[in-house]
View: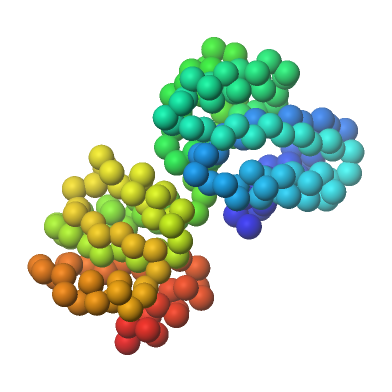
Length: 200
């Protein structure tokens, strides 16, 4: 939903400037975000339907950090076809995309989806409280991957991260010694509410 709103607002604003417009986006996502390319496609279609006179096309580059040369070739191929903007939705900035943007003059917009900004925020909070450790419960395995990617190398807080709250997870948390100084639950309203009710 965040992605759809971001793209819709961007396209509507551009549509106000020019009455008939054809835009081509290059979207960079992590290869671990398997559902994101489909969401991008739906958002592009919705934006095009809601903005008469605008044609939108996209090229999604799934960034494989273990084989970034291949990803870079795909990015260069997409850019060579002509693009309006590069949108980087990867978990952390991709230096090769920034350099390509700079050398070609194509604007690059970096945006974070999901819980990454919240994770950075609670990490800053934990560090300001001189926390040494925290237990973090997240909604899904992809959220766990994103969170670990955000925290590794940036956080001085020792973390225990898990997707969901199961009986085994609850037992592991209960028996953990020393007990974590902080507990963090990250997810949508239903997940957080259900998790809170289970631990109460």
